[in-house]
Amino acid sequence: MAAIETTYRDALRQALIDAMTEDQSIFVMGEEVGRYGGAYGVTKGLLEMFGEHRIVDTPIAEAGIVGAAVGAAMTGSRPVAELMYIDFAGLTMDQVANQAAKSRYMFGGQIGVPMVLRMQGGTGRSGAAQHSQSLESWFTHIPGLRVAMPATVNDAYHLLRMALKCPDPVIFIEHKSLYVKKGEMDPAKPDGEWGKSVIRREGRDLTIVTYSKMVFESLAAAETLAQQGIEAEVVDIRCLNPLDDETFIKSVMKTGRAMVVTESVLTSGMAAELSARISERCFEYLEEPVVRVAGEDIPIPVSPALERGSVPSAQLIAETGLWLVKRVAPSWAAA
Image 1 (cartoon, rainbow, N blue to C red):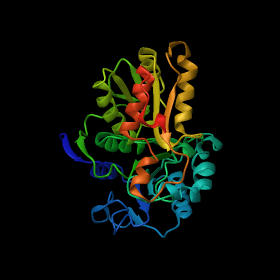
Image 2 (cartoon, one colour; image 1 turned 90 degrees about the vertical axis):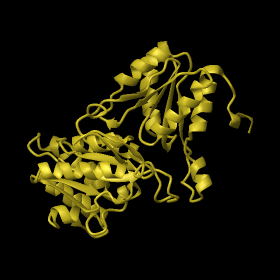
Image 3 (tube, rainbow, N blue to C red; image 1 turned 30 degrees about the vertical axis):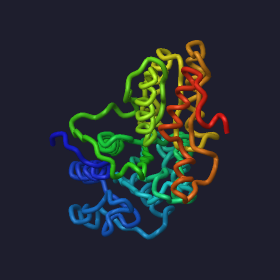
Image 4 (cartoon, rainbow, N blue to C red; image 1 turned 180 degrees about the vertical axis):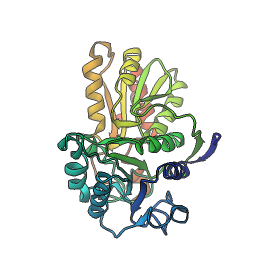
């Protein structure tokens, strides 16, 4: 297949189609993944293509979905389990943290759990406090799991294909605001290797380390900063585990300034881990302390305006970058 323009959602669907065509052990299970086509339409049409034995509609029972997927993975299948929202992942934590993540270790490598747990998170749909959270750090804290969060259309395709070849359980987190985003998908040319960061924009004055939807907010901010004579380098980490810190460490050593941008909340989130790694390894190279730009430590509001204000925007990132490089006070500093 040649490179085509498609949506993030359709790239995910194509990844499932291609993987399921190649590997008969792969099947999909979850709430309304069959007849309805998934909460956001990713599995639409797959029931007709692969049948009800490989596209399995389940009851509303998240613990049961993930528990069944773990058992299937341990006995030779490669399940793709879907949770409608990452917010419901708390119902599955025993199955994820104590079974999926630990079994290969506890059985001395004799049994693996090669499964993919797809879920979506983030803001942008006025889903409010129980349907808009960014909880990826729950999973990065658990040894034995792999965590991927694609930003681009091409990464949506390739990272899912790679996840479906991984011997470990993969938490695959899609951003709900990206499903309709268009971009180029080239099945023959991934953005990068599994577990490797990618530089989305080169720069010399500031390194912005980010992932998922915040990649696009950061790229927009970088264009604004360029108009002020500041060239920001944007690093998309893509996989949170395994985490490639060498790419952004080298970038920070070059630029001397670092900003970490995440949609997840500031306190104890992924931004703290990334900032700590930069501070530990780049201390003598830093012109300024590492800055975190992250979500507010609040439940996500249902109001669209308040929702937008609860997570980083391109404007906030650009103003923070201008302050970090040129000490120009941001608009909110006078408040």
